[in-house]
Image (cartoon, rainbow, N blue to C red; front, side, top):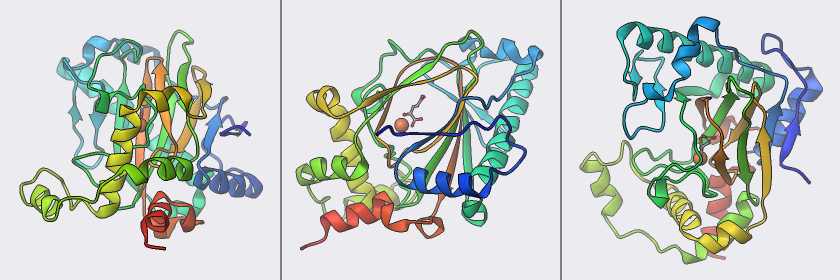
Length: 290
Ligand SMILES: O=C(O)CCC(=O)C(=O)O
Ligand SMILES: [Fe+2]
């Protein structure tokens, strides 16, 4: 059974029909990737110069944009290029907002739109520390920004101008990942997470759930045997396609490709249709005494 749930829609201006909306919410909460091979986010002709990876600040893997305090991070360019890029990213934010509303209207009043990112660099061959290496299978969990169980929903569009697909590997279901790695994880040191927060090293308190998720993320990436032998599927996201996935739940690795736009959306567990499927509830169930 594939992890891909296909939708043939070509536009984001109209809601999916009711059956497809049900299919979408069920699939995404069960850890599937909603794939829209015929749904493209287009750049204007005059924007194509922004695709040059030189626009990235040295060492940065993406440029991020926050629509709430419009500014770019990670870009090195002239003011007019920055202005164009900001407009482009804002348009992608609007595109994602409409798409989420039309594909997953169940979430409407609970979504919180966060950063938009632009990733103009080729992934293959990039050198990073193993913890930052997204070519290794992982579930998303971030050291400085604990999310305390809130879901991470992401919209991606491959905007390659030369027809290059983005290649991912998608691994086994979250429950299998958690069952494999949780037994290797120690409880945190008393007071350590409180200190991280007080010192400003985490943006909010790292809950026990965040501790487990970060450890699962790190242990997955560190285990090279697991990377090779875990059940996995290779997926090619074509140029000019769009997909949506809950990256805190779906084990994923980005192997190659260039030119991607991404929007992160947070969703509280209480806004889910099937909250018992959330990684939070799964971790809670697997770590509570029998
Ligand atoms: O850049 C990509 O294709 C995906 C990278 C990744 O791991 C993520 O966005 O969570
Ligand atoms: Fe990721």
